[in-house]
Length: 318
Image (cartoon, rainbow, N blue to C red):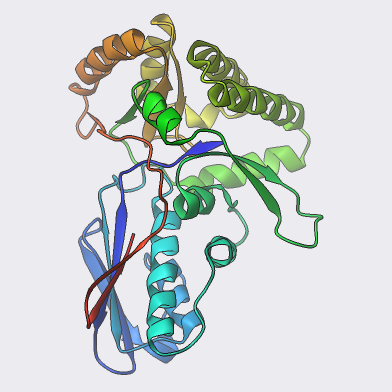
């Protein structure tokens, strides 16, 4: 289950030297440019370069702008990939070639990211980026068709209600999900943590039911139950500041969890409106003692990826 936030990422296509591809990002304050035949898939922009390669597009700059903190566990790389695929699909249509359907964007974004990360990715971040909203995902890789089912848990009104009852904060420390994910996968394969993961799966299904019924207090309880198991099976996810933020939330009757693979990055909380208001003040006070930590002002985004044509020579997607 995941929530799409309105901390959006924008990808814009600009003209560049024919035969070359350039990627620039304000988040990393960096840029790279290579001849099309030599673009690397293992650089910091390797995923974006792989998308240009897939679409066989060159003579362009792919500009990535994001309001999300870098390496915060909020699915930033997957979101950028989804936006870049959407932008390239629009460019293909303008060239009178076939574009890509929304459900196929999810597939392509996953396979490219999983490939450049050598098999440590899932489909969850791409799913949130493509569809927006609050969704429960069921994976069924044995099916011949698409390997997932999506259940939208809340309508627009429900999403607004949830937005009033949640907090998101950056702990002030970045995380590297690929490294943490590899250790989790290894321990699962060895059988050390498998029973814990199965228990977590059951709790997440319970959390999804509570959100669908707008049972916010019960949802917070489910979050607390999941985190209790996570402390046993994924101890690497809990840095001192993350543990403190979660503890504060639980003492106020809320539930909180690290985003993504943890080990730094963002934390989010769920609770009743009054409890969340008190927790906001407490979290803000705690984060003042960190170098980069801060509250993130955001809400549920209902839309997902969309297209904006700025003028004839600029194509944007977010």
